[in-house]
Length: 124
Image (cartoon, rainbow, N blue to C red; front, side, top):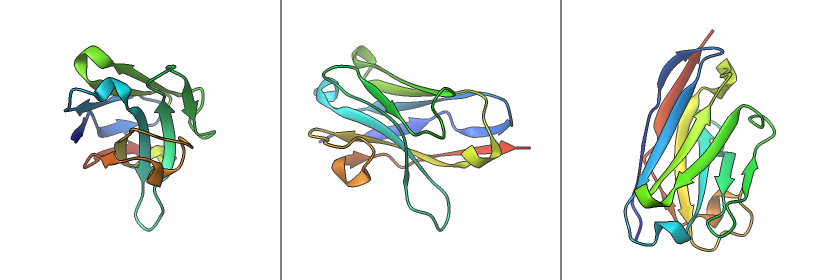
């Protein structure tokens, strides 16, 4: 069982930066692939970024590539999402997710555990 808790969301002006954190419980955090997704009202949950536990390989949605960076600190059981050059269209609730056997990183149902989400609002 893994419990996830996101933090770091808030209100920021366009062009600004935020760093989201996702703290995980459980001794086997280091063996989980971790992902960040986001969702706005009336829309499906959207893939943002993910990182493999075994290789450290990362993947990003085209809309955030070059602006967002995902990283993990296994010693702290935490995954981060550094978000730079934020745009108004990045406004959403951001969720972190953990999966023990993730095939396609961008597919939400591949993940086993989800956090409660943190709101990110980017103003113009």
